[in-house]
Image (cartoon, rainbow, N blue to C red; front, side):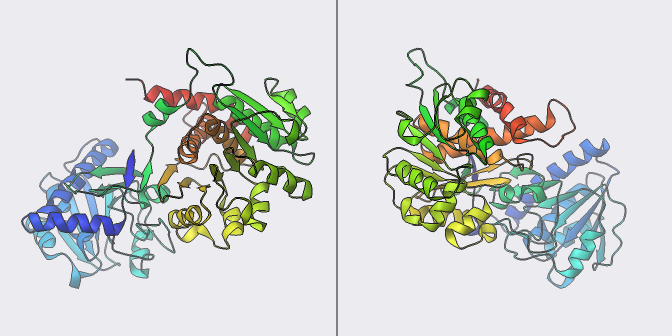
Length: 481
Protein backbone atom coordinates (compact mmCIF):
# COMPACT_ATOMS: atom_id res chain seq x y z
CA UNK A 1 0.00 0.00 0.00
CA UNK A 2 0.95 3.61 -0.48
CA UNK A 3 0.68 5.50 2.78
CA UNK A 4 -0.01 9.20 3.29
CA UNK A 5 0.97 11.32 6.28
CA UNK A 6 -0.19 14.71 7.50
CA UNK A 7 2.11 17.68 7.92
CA UNK A 8 2.02 17.27 11.70
CA UNK A 9 3.07 13.62 11.43
CA UNK A 10 5.92 14.45 9.04
CA UNK A 11 7.13 17.38 11.14
CA UNK A 12 7.21 15.21 14.27
CA UNK A 13 9.25 12.54 12.48
CA UNK A 14 11.61 15.17 11.06
CA UNK A 15 12.16 16.68 14.50
CA UNK A 16 13.39 13.34 15.85
CA UNK A 17 15.74 12.87 12.91
CA UNK A 18 17.05 16.43 13.03
CA UNK A 19 17.99 15.94 16.67
CA UNK A 20 20.09 12.91 15.73
CA UNK A 21 21.90 14.36 12.70
CA UNK A 22 24.53 17.07 12.26
CA UNK A 23 23.10 20.48 11.36
CA UNK A 24 22.12 20.69 7.71
CA UNK A 25 22.56 16.97 7.02
CA UNK A 26 18.85 16.24 6.55
CA UNK A 27 18.43 19.09 4.07
CA UNK A 28 21.41 17.98 2.04
CA UNK A 29 20.05 14.43 2.07
CA UNK A 30 16.76 15.71 0.64
CA UNK A 31 18.58 17.91 -1.87
CA UNK A 32 20.61 14.95 -3.09
CA UNK A 33 17.41 13.06 -3.87
CA UNK A 34 15.93 16.12 -5.57
CA UNK A 35 19.07 16.52 -7.66
CA UNK A 36 18.88 12.92 -8.84
CA UNK A 37 15.28 13.40 -10.01
CA UNK A 38 16.04 16.71 -11.75
CA UNK A 39 19.05 15.19 -13.50
CA UNK A 40 17.00 12.20 -14.62
CA UNK A 41 14.29 14.51 -15.91
CA UNK A 42 16.82 16.60 -17.82
CA UNK A 43 18.27 13.47 -19.35
CA UNK A 44 14.89 12.13 -20.45
CA UNK A 45 13.71 15.46 -21.84
CA UNK A 46 16.91 16.83 -23.39
CA UNK A 47 19.25 13.87 -23.73
CA UNK A 48 21.80 15.03 -21.17
CA UNK A 49 22.63 16.92 -17.97
CA UNK A 50 25.79 18.97 -18.51
CA UNK A 51 25.16 22.19 -20.37
CA UNK A 52 21.45 22.24 -19.59
CA UNK A 53 19.71 25.16 -17.87
CA UNK A 54 17.69 25.08 -14.64
CA UNK A 55 15.95 27.98 -12.93
CA UNK A 56 15.17 27.78 -9.21
CA UNK A 57 12.20 29.65 -7.73
CA UNK A 58 13.25 30.17 -4.14
CA UNK A 59 11.01 31.24 -1.28
CA UNK A 60 11.75 31.44 2.40
CA UNK A 61 12.10 28.34 4.53
CA UNK A 62 13.33 24.83 4.01
CA UNK A 63 11.88 24.17 0.56
CA UNK A 64 13.85 27.12 -0.74
CA UNK A 65 16.91 25.72 1.01
CA UNK A 66 16.37 22.31 -0.59
CA UNK A 67 16.19 23.97 -4.00
CA UNK A 68 19.37 26.00 -3.40
CA UNK A 69 21.39 23.01 -2.19
CA UNK A 70 20.15 21.03 -5.17
CA UNK A 71 21.14 23.90 -7.43
CA UNK A 72 24.67 23.75 -6.06
CA UNK A 73 24.83 20.00 -6.73
CA UNK A 74 23.48 20.46 -10.26
CA UNK A 75 25.99 23.22 -10.89
CA UNK A 76 28.81 20.81 -10.04
CA UNK A 77 27.39 18.48 -12.71
CA UNK A 78 27.72 21.16 -15.36
CA UNK A 79 24.19 22.57 -15.26
CA UNK A 80 23.73 26.32 -15.69
CA UNK A 81 21.70 27.25 -12.60
CA UNK A 82 19.85 30.50 -12.02
CA UNK A 83 18.09 31.17 -8.68
CA UNK A 84 15.35 33.77 -8.32
CA UNK A 85 14.92 34.82 -4.70
CA UNK A 86 11.37 35.85 -3.86
CA UNK A 87 12.17 36.73 -0.25
CA UNK A 88 15.89 37.57 -0.04
CA UNK A 89 15.65 38.68 3.58
CA UNK A 90 14.52 35.23 4.73
CA UNK A 91 16.32 33.05 2.21
CA UNK A 92 18.13 29.95 3.49
CA UNK A 93 21.62 31.37 4.05
CA UNK A 94 23.66 28.17 3.89
CA UNK A 95 21.92 26.97 0.73
CA UNK A 96 22.43 30.33 -0.95
CA UNK A 97 26.11 30.36 -0.01
CA UNK A 98 26.53 26.85 -1.43
CA UNK A 99 24.93 27.85 -4.73
CA UNK A 100 27.08 30.96 -5.06
CA UNK A 101 30.21 28.99 -4.22
CA UNK A 102 29.35 26.52 -6.99
CA UNK A 103 28.98 29.32 -9.52
CA UNK A 104 25.22 29.63 -9.64
CA UNK A 105 23.61 32.87 -10.78
CA UNK A 106 21.37 34.70 -8.29
CA UNK A 107 18.63 37.23 -9.07
CA UNK A 108 16.10 38.90 -6.82
CA UNK A 109 12.39 39.59 -7.18
CA UNK A 110 9.42 38.37 -9.17
CA UNK A 111 10.40 40.61 -12.09
CA UNK A 112 13.76 38.90 -12.52
CA UNK A 113 14.79 37.36 -15.81
CA UNK A 114 13.73 33.71 -15.91
CA UNK A 115 16.29 32.88 -18.56
CA UNK A 116 15.47 30.10 -21.00
CA UNK A 117 15.45 27.04 -18.71
CA UNK A 118 15.02 23.42 -19.68
CA UNK A 119 13.46 22.84 -16.25
CA UNK A 120 12.21 24.98 -13.38
CA UNK A 121 12.42 23.91 -9.73
CA UNK A 122 9.56 25.14 -7.54
CA UNK A 123 10.93 25.85 -4.05
CA UNK A 124 8.56 28.71 -3.26
CA UNK A 125 6.46 27.27 -0.43
CA UNK A 126 6.96 24.21 1.79
CA UNK A 127 4.55 21.89 3.58
CA UNK A 128 4.03 24.44 6.36
CA UNK A 129 2.66 26.97 3.89
CA UNK A 130 -1.06 27.52 3.44
CA UNK A 131 -3.17 29.37 0.90
CA UNK A 132 -2.60 30.32 -2.74
CA UNK A 133 0.51 31.86 -4.22
CA UNK A 134 0.89 35.51 -3.35
CA UNK A 135 0.57 37.93 -6.29
CA UNK A 136 4.30 38.37 -7.01
CA UNK A 137 4.93 34.63 -7.00
CA UNK A 138 1.76 33.98 -9.00
CA UNK A 139 2.86 36.48 -11.63
CA UNK A 140 6.28 34.83 -11.83
CA UNK A 141 4.80 31.34 -12.22
CA UNK A 142 2.41 32.59 -14.90
CA UNK A 143 5.43 33.56 -17.02
CA UNK A 144 6.88 30.06 -16.99
CA UNK A 145 6.91 27.93 -20.11
CA UNK A 146 9.31 25.16 -19.04
CA UNK A 147 8.26 22.00 -17.15
CA UNK A 148 8.31 22.34 -13.36
CA UNK A 149 9.75 20.01 -10.74
CA UNK A 150 8.09 20.78 -7.41
CA UNK A 151 9.97 20.44 -4.13
CA UNK A 152 7.82 18.26 -1.82
CA UNK A 153 4.55 19.74 -3.12
CA UNK A 154 3.39 22.27 -5.72
CA UNK A 155 3.37 25.70 -4.13
CA UNK A 156 -0.10 27.07 -3.50
CA UNK A 157 -1.72 23.65 -2.90
CA UNK A 158 -2.66 22.65 0.65
CA UNK A 159 -0.53 19.67 1.76
CA UNK A 160 -3.21 18.01 3.88
CA UNK A 161 -6.37 18.65 1.82
CA UNK A 162 -5.09 19.17 -1.72
CA UNK A 163 -7.23 22.32 -1.97
CA UNK A 164 -6.23 25.19 -4.24
CA UNK A 165 -7.86 28.44 -3.21
CA UNK A 166 -6.23 30.53 -5.93
CA UNK A 167 -3.07 30.57 -8.05
CA UNK A 168 -0.90 27.48 -7.63
CA UNK A 169 1.91 25.64 -9.38
CA UNK A 170 1.10 22.77 -11.74
CA UNK A 171 4.14 20.52 -11.80
CA UNK A 172 5.28 17.85 -14.23
CA UNK A 173 7.03 16.05 -11.37
CA UNK A 174 6.82 16.40 -7.60
CA UNK A 175 9.64 15.12 -5.40
CA UNK A 176 8.24 14.08 -2.01
CA UNK A 177 10.70 13.94 0.88
CA UNK A 178 10.43 11.11 3.39
CA UNK A 179 6.69 10.49 3.07
CA UNK A 180 3.77 10.96 0.75
CA UNK A 181 1.32 13.60 1.89
CA UNK A 182 -2.42 13.63 1.12
CA UNK A 183 -1.85 16.34 -1.50
CA UNK A 184 -0.01 13.83 -3.68
CA UNK A 185 -3.25 11.90 -4.24
CA UNK A 186 -5.91 14.54 -3.65
CA UNK A 187 -4.32 17.07 -6.04
CA UNK A 188 -2.62 14.71 -8.47
CA UNK A 189 -3.37 16.98 -11.41
CA UNK A 190 -1.16 19.65 -9.81
CA UNK A 191 1.55 17.21 -8.70
CA UNK A 192 2.20 15.33 -11.93
CA UNK A 193 4.36 12.27 -11.45
CA UNK A 194 5.33 11.83 -7.80
CA UNK A 195 8.80 10.59 -6.87
CA UNK A 196 9.35 9.61 -3.23
CA UNK A 197 12.83 10.17 -1.80
CA UNK A 198 13.70 8.25 1.36
CA UNK A 199 15.37 10.54 3.90
CA UNK A 200 15.19 8.15 6.86
CA UNK A 201 12.00 9.23 8.63
CA UNK A 202 10.53 6.92 11.28
CA UNK A 203 6.81 7.34 10.66
CA UNK A 204 3.74 6.16 12.64
CA UNK A 205 1.08 3.85 11.26
CA UNK A 206 -0.82 5.59 8.49
CA UNK A 207 -4.61 5.90 8.56
CA UNK A 208 -4.79 7.13 4.94
CA UNK A 209 -3.59 4.66 2.33
CA UNK A 210 -3.97 3.47 -1.25
CA UNK A 211 -4.24 -0.23 -2.05
CA UNK A 212 -1.54 -1.46 -4.41
CA UNK A 213 -2.62 -2.91 -7.74
CA UNK A 214 -0.98 -6.24 -6.86
CA UNK A 215 -2.91 -6.40 -3.57
CA UNK A 216 -6.20 -5.72 -5.35
CA UNK A 217 -5.42 -8.30 -8.02
CA UNK A 218 -4.54 -10.93 -5.45
CA UNK A 219 -7.74 -10.23 -3.49
CA UNK A 220 -10.13 -10.20 -6.44
CA UNK A 221 -12.66 -13.03 -6.00
CA UNK A 222 -12.12 -15.87 -8.46
CA UNK A 223 -13.94 -19.25 -8.60
CA UNK A 224 -12.21 -22.07 -6.77
CA UNK A 225 -12.38 -25.79 -7.49
CA UNK A 226 -15.27 -26.32 -5.06
CA UNK A 227 -17.25 -23.17 -5.90
CA UNK A 228 -20.65 -22.90 -7.52
CA UNK A 229 -22.69 -19.87 -8.57
CA UNK A 230 -24.12 -19.45 -5.08
CA UNK A 231 -20.92 -19.81 -3.08
CA UNK A 232 -19.24 -17.03 -5.04
CA UNK A 233 -21.73 -14.40 -3.92
CA UNK A 234 -25.22 -13.46 -5.06
CA UNK A 235 -25.84 -9.74 -5.36
CA UNK A 236 -29.26 -8.15 -5.58
CA UNK A 237 -29.69 -5.00 -7.67
CA UNK A 238 -32.55 -2.56 -7.26
CA UNK A 239 -31.95 0.11 -9.87
CA UNK A 240 -33.68 1.68 -12.82
CA UNK A 241 -37.28 2.64 -13.41
CA UNK A 242 -39.65 3.36 -16.27
CA UNK A 243 -38.03 6.78 -16.55
CA UNK A 244 -34.41 5.58 -16.13
CA UNK A 245 -34.21 1.94 -17.27
CA UNK A 246 -30.58 2.40 -18.33
CA UNK A 247 -29.48 2.69 -14.70
CA UNK A 248 -30.68 -0.85 -14.10
CA UNK A 249 -28.97 -2.12 -17.25
CA UNK A 250 -25.63 -0.52 -16.33
CA UNK A 251 -25.68 -1.46 -12.64
CA UNK A 252 -26.70 -5.07 -13.23
CA UNK A 253 -24.25 -5.44 -16.11
CA UNK A 254 -21.39 -4.18 -13.96
CA UNK A 255 -22.24 -6.72 -11.28
CA UNK A 256 -22.25 -9.46 -13.93
CA UNK A 257 -18.81 -8.39 -15.14
CA UNK A 258 -17.20 -8.01 -11.71
CA UNK A 259 -17.55 -11.51 -10.27
CA UNK A 260 -18.58 -15.02 -11.30
CA UNK A 261 -21.49 -15.52 -8.90
CA UNK A 262 -25.11 -14.60 -9.56
CA UNK A 263 -26.93 -11.32 -10.10
CA UNK A 264 -30.58 -10.98 -9.12
CA UNK A 265 -32.37 -7.90 -10.42
CA UNK A 266 -35.56 -6.57 -8.82
CA UNK A 267 -37.25 -3.64 -10.50
CA UNK A 268 -39.42 -2.31 -13.29
CA UNK A 269 -36.56 -2.35 -15.82
CA UNK A 270 -36.44 -6.18 -15.78
CA UNK A 271 -37.25 -6.54 -19.52
CA UNK A 272 -34.45 -4.15 -20.51
CA UNK A 273 -31.98 -5.80 -18.15
CA UNK A 274 -32.78 -9.28 -19.48
CA UNK A 275 -32.53 -8.16 -23.10
CA UNK A 276 -28.95 -7.06 -22.45
CA UNK A 277 -27.89 -9.52 -19.74
CA UNK A 278 -29.75 -12.83 -20.10
CA UNK A 279 -27.71 -14.40 -17.29
CA UNK A 280 -29.38 -12.10 -14.73
CA UNK A 281 -32.29 -13.54 -12.72
CA UNK A 282 -34.77 -10.69 -13.04
CA UNK A 283 -38.09 -10.04 -11.31
CA UNK A 284 -40.22 -6.92 -11.06
CA UNK A 285 -40.12 -6.40 -7.30
CA UNK A 286 -38.10 -6.76 -4.12
CA UNK A 287 -40.44 -9.31 -2.58
CA UNK A 288 -39.84 -11.81 -5.37
CA UNK A 289 -36.08 -11.38 -5.60
CA UNK A 290 -34.95 -14.47 -3.70
CA UNK A 291 -31.91 -14.87 -1.46
CA UNK A 292 -28.86 -12.67 -1.90
CA UNK A 293 -25.67 -11.94 0.05
CA UNK A 294 -25.68 -8.16 -0.54
CA UNK A 295 -27.89 -5.47 -2.06
CA UNK A 296 -27.24 -2.50 -4.32
CA UNK A 297 -30.07 0.00 -4.13
CA UNK A 298 -30.70 3.40 -5.63
CA UNK A 299 -29.48 4.15 -9.16
CA UNK A 300 -32.40 5.54 -11.16
CA UNK A 301 -35.02 3.97 -8.84
CA UNK A 302 -36.88 7.23 -8.17
CA UNK A 303 -37.60 9.07 -4.94
CA UNK A 304 -41.36 8.58 -4.50
CA UNK A 305 -43.27 6.72 -1.81
CA UNK A 306 -42.95 3.38 -3.59
CA UNK A 307 -39.17 3.75 -3.80
CA UNK A 308 -39.03 4.74 -0.11
CA UNK A 309 -40.99 1.63 0.84
CA UNK A 310 -38.56 -0.58 -1.08
CA UNK A 311 -35.56 1.18 0.47
CA UNK A 312 -36.93 0.66 3.98
CA UNK A 313 -37.38 -3.03 3.25
CA UNK A 314 -33.84 -3.43 1.91
CA UNK A 315 -32.28 -1.58 4.82
CA UNK A 316 -34.42 -3.59 7.21
CA UNK A 317 -32.55 -6.77 6.27
CA UNK A 318 -29.42 -7.97 8.03
CA UNK A 319 -27.46 -8.00 4.75
CA UNK A 320 -24.72 -5.70 3.47
CA UNK A 321 -26.24 -2.83 1.45
CA UNK A 322 -24.69 -0.30 -0.93
CA UNK A 323 -26.80 2.90 -1.04
CA UNK A 324 -26.41 5.13 -4.10
CA UNK A 325 -28.06 7.87 -6.15
CA UNK A 326 -31.84 8.20 -5.56
CA UNK A 327 -31.57 6.10 -2.41
CA UNK A 328 -29.13 8.69 -1.03
CA UNK A 329 -31.69 11.41 -1.67
CA UNK A 330 -34.23 9.44 0.35
CA UNK A 331 -31.72 8.80 3.13
CA UNK A 332 -30.86 12.50 3.29
CA UNK A 333 -34.47 13.16 4.26
CA UNK A 334 -34.56 10.24 6.71
CA UNK A 335 -31.02 9.54 8.05
CA UNK A 336 -32.32 7.07 10.60
CA UNK A 337 -32.72 4.55 7.79
CA UNK A 338 -28.97 3.91 7.80
CA UNK A 339 -27.38 5.71 10.75
CA UNK A 340 -26.23 3.08 13.20
CA UNK A 341 -27.42 0.17 11.03
CA UNK A 342 -25.82 -3.02 12.38
CA UNK A 343 -25.19 -4.74 9.03
CA UNK A 344 -22.39 -3.46 6.76
CA UNK A 345 -23.54 -0.38 4.86
CA UNK A 346 -21.81 1.72 2.21
CA UNK A 347 -22.95 5.16 1.04
CA UNK A 348 -21.54 6.25 -2.33
CA UNK A 349 -22.30 9.97 -2.84
CA UNK A 350 -20.86 12.47 -5.24
CA UNK A 351 -20.18 15.94 -3.82
CA UNK A 352 -23.74 17.22 -4.31
CA UNK A 353 -25.27 14.15 -2.69
CA UNK A 354 -22.77 14.42 0.16
CA UNK A 355 -23.91 18.01 0.77
CA UNK A 356 -27.54 16.84 0.88
CA UNK A 357 -26.65 14.15 3.42
CA UNK A 358 -24.67 16.43 5.72
CA UNK A 359 -25.45 20.05 4.88
CA UNK A 360 -21.72 20.52 4.24
CA UNK A 361 -19.70 20.91 1.06
CA UNK A 362 -16.89 18.34 1.28
CA UNK A 363 -14.56 20.24 -1.06
CA UNK A 364 -12.59 22.03 1.66
CA UNK A 365 -11.41 18.76 3.24
CA UNK A 366 -12.54 15.67 1.34
CA UNK A 367 -10.77 13.19 3.60
CA UNK A 368 -11.83 14.88 6.82
CA UNK A 369 -15.46 15.27 5.76
CA UNK A 370 -15.75 11.69 4.49
CA UNK A 371 -14.19 10.35 7.66
CA UNK A 372 -16.57 12.47 9.79
CA UNK A 373 -19.69 11.21 8.01
CA UNK A 374 -18.55 7.60 8.34
CA UNK A 375 -17.96 8.05 12.06
CA UNK A 376 -21.19 9.99 12.69
CA UNK A 377 -23.46 7.52 10.89
CA UNK A 378 -21.54 4.31 11.55
CA UNK A 379 -21.40 3.44 7.84
CA UNK A 380 -18.78 3.18 5.17
CA UNK A 381 -18.68 6.20 2.86
CA UNK A 382 -17.27 6.49 -0.64
CA UNK A 383 -16.98 10.09 -1.87
CA UNK A 384 -16.70 10.08 -5.65
CA UNK A 385 -14.23 12.21 -7.57
CA UNK A 386 -11.04 11.96 -9.56
CA UNK A 387 -9.51 10.94 -6.24
CA UNK A 388 -12.13 8.72 -4.64
CA UNK A 389 -12.11 8.79 -0.84
CA UNK A 390 -13.39 5.75 1.06
CA UNK A 391 -13.75 5.95 4.83
CA UNK A 392 -14.65 3.38 7.47
CA UNK A 393 -16.32 4.26 10.78
CA UNK A 394 -13.07 3.38 12.58
CA UNK A 395 -11.28 6.25 10.81
CA UNK A 396 -9.44 4.19 8.20
CA UNK A 397 -9.30 5.85 4.77
CA UNK A 398 -8.41 4.40 1.38
CA UNK A 399 -7.82 6.63 -1.63
CA UNK A 400 -8.01 5.86 -5.32
CA UNK A 401 -6.46 8.44 -7.64
CA UNK A 402 -7.94 7.67 -11.05
CA UNK A 403 -5.14 9.17 -13.12
CA UNK A 404 -7.64 11.23 -15.11
CA UNK A 405 -11.30 12.08 -15.44
CA UNK A 406 -12.36 9.60 -18.11
CA UNK A 407 -15.09 8.27 -15.79
CA UNK A 408 -16.76 11.69 -15.52
CA UNK A 409 -19.71 10.64 -17.68
CA UNK A 410 -23.40 9.97 -17.09
CA UNK A 411 -24.07 6.48 -15.79
CA UNK A 412 -20.51 5.77 -14.64
CA UNK A 413 -21.67 5.82 -11.02
CA UNK A 414 -24.22 3.10 -11.79
CA UNK A 415 -21.38 0.93 -13.09
CA UNK A 416 -19.31 1.61 -9.98
CA UNK A 417 -22.17 0.60 -7.70
CA UNK A 418 -22.65 -2.68 -9.53
CA UNK A 419 -18.97 -3.58 -9.32
CA UNK A 420 -18.69 -2.78 -5.61
CA UNK A 421 -21.97 -4.46 -4.75
CA UNK A 422 -20.83 -7.67 -6.42
CA UNK A 423 -17.61 -7.56 -4.41
CA UNK A 424 -19.52 -6.99 -1.17
CA UNK A 425 -21.65 -10.06 -1.91
CA UNK A 426 -18.50 -12.21 -1.78
CA UNK A 427 -17.93 -11.23 1.85
CA UNK A 428 -15.47 -8.38 1.39
CA UNK A 429 -15.82 -5.54 3.91
CA UNK A 430 -17.29 -2.31 2.48
CA UNK A 431 -14.01 -0.39 2.84
CA UNK A 432 -12.04 -3.01 0.91
CA UNK A 433 -14.73 -3.70 -1.68
CA UNK A 434 -15.14 0.02 -2.32
CA UNK A 435 -11.42 0.63 -2.79
CA UNK A 436 -11.02 -2.40 -5.05
CA UNK A 437 -14.08 -1.50 -7.09
CA UNK A 438 -13.00 2.11 -7.46
CA UNK A 439 -9.60 1.03 -8.79
CA UNK A 440 -11.08 -1.39 -11.33
CA UNK A 441 -13.65 1.23 -12.35
CA UNK A 442 -11.08 3.97 -12.96
CA UNK A 443 -8.79 1.57 -14.80
CA UNK A 444 -11.70 0.43 -17.00
CA UNK A 445 -12.44 4.08 -17.81
CA UNK A 446 -8.83 4.72 -18.79
CA UNK A 447 -8.74 1.55 -20.92
CA UNK A 448 -11.95 2.58 -22.66
CA UNK A 449 -10.64 6.09 -23.32
CA UNK A 450 -7.37 4.81 -24.77
CA UNK A 451 -8.45 1.58 -26.49
CA UNK A 452 -4.82 0.66 -27.07
CA UNK A 453 -3.98 4.06 -28.53
CA UNK A 454 -1.78 6.80 -27.19
CA UNK A 455 -4.58 9.29 -27.82
CA UNK A 456 -7.65 9.26 -25.58
CA UNK A 457 -11.21 9.94 -26.66
CA UNK A 458 -14.36 10.68 -24.65
CA UNK A 459 -16.23 7.61 -23.43
CA UNK A 460 -19.71 6.65 -22.29
CA UNK A 461 -20.67 4.53 -19.29
CA UNK A 462 -21.39 1.62 -21.63
CA UNK A 463 -17.84 1.81 -23.00
CA UNK A 464 -16.50 1.86 -19.44
CA UNK A 465 -18.59 -1.19 -18.53
CA UNK A 466 -17.22 -3.06 -21.55
CA UNK A 467 -13.69 -2.75 -20.10
CA UNK A 468 -14.39 -3.93 -16.52
CA UNK A 469 -13.19 -7.48 -17.16
CA UNK A 470 -10.08 -6.20 -18.94
CA UNK A 471 -9.35 -3.99 -15.93
CA UNK A 472 -9.68 -6.96 -13.57
CA UNK A 473 -7.23 -8.91 -15.76
CA UNK A 474 -4.71 -6.06 -15.57
CA UNK A 475 -5.00 -5.92 -11.79
CA UNK A 476 -4.73 -9.70 -11.40
CA UNK A 477 -1.66 -9.74 -13.66
CA UNK A 478 0.07 -7.43 -11.16
CA UNK A 479 -0.31 -10.11 -8.49
CA UNK A 480 1.44 -12.83 -10.52
CA UNK A 481 5.00 -13.38 -9.15
